[in-house]
Image 1: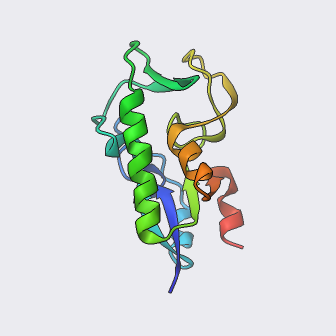
Image 2: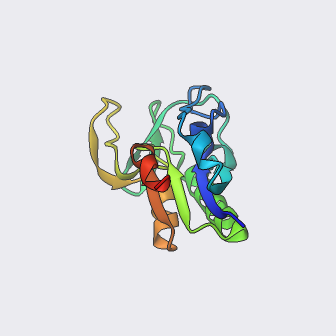
Length: 145
């Protein structure tokens, strides 16, 4: 049986990005040989429509560019992603870098200027705190070794 890998659905080509597009990464196809892929989109799972206004994390809150507080949706999506990881037994996650939900180690700073600061997205933070090993798409080759 293949190991379960939680993966940001946008990396698989699903049009769930805030803009309505995706962040398809061609190496995700090679992952299928080694892992059972478990797609998640915490933003969709939390109830945000696609497309929606871009959001960035500011401390413990997530705010849209228009100033709406969408922390509740991001938190709900993170909890549902964790539930999915537990249901499938996933111990690894490949998540979209710099995202306010999936970014791990570096996220946008909340100014909507493209400035990156140390930090984690809401879902990545919750998954890591519950024992999952998180990879960003720039480290995808490590999962293929």
